[in-house]
Length: 380
Image (cartoon, rainbow, N blue to C red):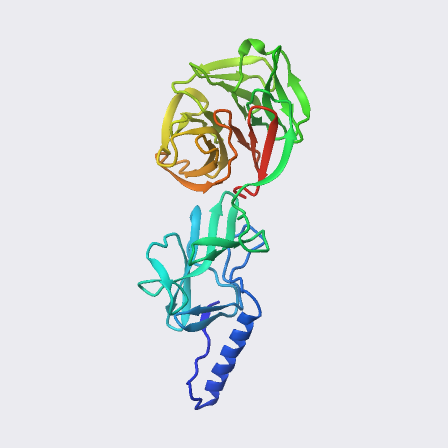
């Protein structure tokens, strides 16, 4: 497995090897002119790509061939944008994943993006997301995507952007959204009654808990933890109510020390969003005790709803724009900082009423009115 230099030749042939070198270049040009090569493997999967066997790479005026097998790119792609760098080492090219293009500029002589050391970036972007890797053909002159792994044309929506999948016309009139592994949990309020509902994805009510008016849990956030339902009631004092399964049987009530704009569960701890740019990690299921705080003020100071989607990733709605944003945190270690790895750049939020949950495959949002939206391809 190597990216080997294609046989060279003298401009005036003096031996058989010169003709062999010419033939090798003629064959390379024919292969390149037969169509736009996609140098990467795994376009139809979420697996980290390699450089495909048989593709040619032009580097610094020399042709190279990925010869005997696919070439495994060195390094481990980090969350967010990764690029593929190549540079010469003797008669072969070496390739690595990199994340920083600040030292690279367009080289008109070699028709590519090079840095001062002669390293070249290939025209691809690999985005590490929750469940794998999205791949994009990348315009290095304009630094924009031109092709993605699920599309067949130019300038199409990349796979990292949520794509509309379905709309369920539900009967929810006052928000809340949870997921118990099978059904969605919500809070339904009318002028005369309040109740919890279990909804299928098409909005059908499969079960309800009637007459919970005395609790006044409108606009509450809902969690399902170890077979019990938790509802956070935002207000002058934020409370967390624990119910015995899907019922109105109240087990306990806890008060928070901060104003809550979203609640989720990371498998060990309750996690809250305070709306001003901080994600708070609580001590297990203790609502009043915060052990770590993640500062996301550099990314946003206005956020609504939050969902933990695994591997240290949290998704929420930015209140000022209504965009879905996802940040990577160091779960199990330093909670002090976060890096944005995704922003939808498309309006999905509804201001203060933004409820969001991850069902294991897709994000599901509820605007606190009549519609539940699901989006596919996000962080998949």
